[in-house]
Image 1 (cartoon, protein in one colour):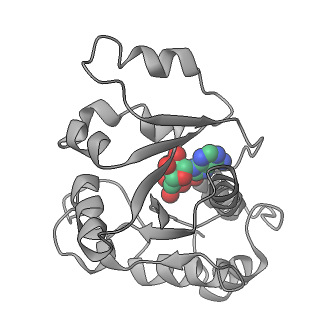
Image 2: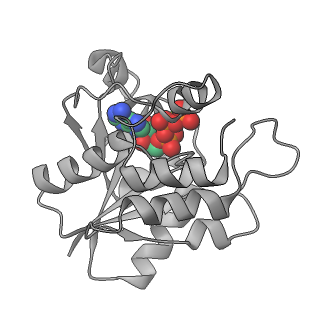
Length: 196
Ligand code: ATP
Ligand code: MG
């Protein structure tokens, strides 16, 4: 099986995430996509992230009618988890599968600073989806001179200029987000008074 792993904070999950996963699945003929919402950051972290129960509930709501799977592996871990451990975990669980790591270009840009990223590149193929401000040449130039070029597929911009940050800001400002998130997510945000 060709399995796509798609990690994120998903605070909240939005239409860009859903489209991106579908697009990657079709283009690379993946058999399945597994969404992996991140755990809560450690107390000291200054990044404010909505609690994992809410974030998970929104991912579930968004994917209710989709075939995509959801893994709670990262959410259940106490410590901060590294992507390399995530992929190793799934390799153990599904030894026959080949793995595709789905990621936005903004996150991929930071890859060289990730824990054991070379090993991570050996373990899976990267599927990098451009965001509106992506410069592909700049991205690849970061890997020049490395012994083994990373296995990377670039998928073109989906023309989805949507981010969770933008959604949180819009809710806070009392603006409409109906076009940016699945309907069930919109309802969840309203029902629970999130991002106000
Ligand atoms: P935030 O603004 O809080 O960082 P986000 O929209 O980037 O939120 P994340 O949960 O950080 O959402 O993203 C999970 C993954 O999805 C990341 O790899 C990110 O690069 C990618 N991603 C999110 N939105 C898009 C988009 N519109 N186009 C391409 N990739 C995206
Ligand atoms: Mg992000």
